[in-house]
Length: 138
Image: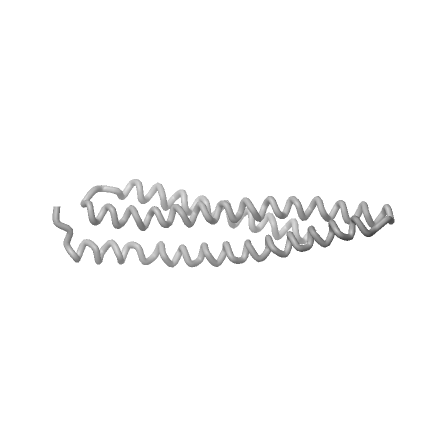
């Protein structure tokens, strides 16, 4: 089986849109990492304040805030995990497009399933991001 340059060029054209999607996912991961970092810093500050305070009311308020931050950390972590899963699925879409073009095999259903999984991962990640924002506003 001979692969023509036109087939490869077409595969490259098909791969361009998912690559732009990867850029958007990377930006989302960057935002989530920044939020994770700030939440970790705040939790550490709360831990330090818990050691220093002896006032029972202040300690109770700090413990409540710490519980919220621990929950935020879990939600952000899951959002990052979901975003990375989505990025991996998009990478597999690009690989599948090239394999299909080079090997002249039918991979359209596999690519469609991978793309659907990528979109599900993005939806989950964005929903978790929204949940984390609501937790932050508590």
